[in-house]
Image (tube, rainbow, N blue to C red; front, top):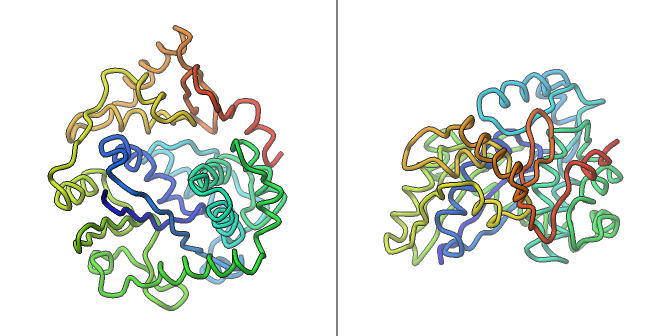
Length: 306
């Protein structure tokens, strides 16, 4: 397998908007990629954002631009105040330590809630509410572990690893930052490693960049083609997919994703009773009707951060 590390943060709109490309790579190469999630920890205190000139209005306007350009669900509205990302990141780390593998679901739940509700990522109660859509975990217990010494230590290891990007291909491309001192990877950055070969895709990249790197790391891999309908995609990703993710997954070669065609095909599945549509922001999350651990965004996401 190819060791694949994603450096990311639940507050980053670039990282959130990269989800369609990441889903494509997951579909094409499946279990041949051994994924690891490393938390960037963009800010420890909201005052760091204030010093950089960020405001709730600026954040909402930025989300509106990301929505129109990249297609992930957004519900842009000024939040009550700025919030830091450290506590939400540590909730993901706590999940990784106590429920290995579930950190990906927790991370996605935080992303979806953060960009589609007035959530504050440094409010423990709101973090717990956002995680109630994730099956198999105890959100309140995980949030209670945010300040545990072992969780803080593991989180600091993530932050340190993220801030080792000096001299990397990401820095050469201008895909790093020095907002808190050391040169760090920006979210999302992906590193592919195998047999001494290490290739870096720094920051936001088109799916073709990932594909070229994976193919060069190991040209003997199996590469799954896109399906003819969204049905296999909803089975492969039982927690659900957004419309833009499905459009990207159904695109062939370097074709531009056809969002209109993807949505029409998804609606056909809903009409036939084989899929469900859960409204989210200005879009929806689509799931197979046979998903055994369905995350019902229609009823449960509405309760989060109410």
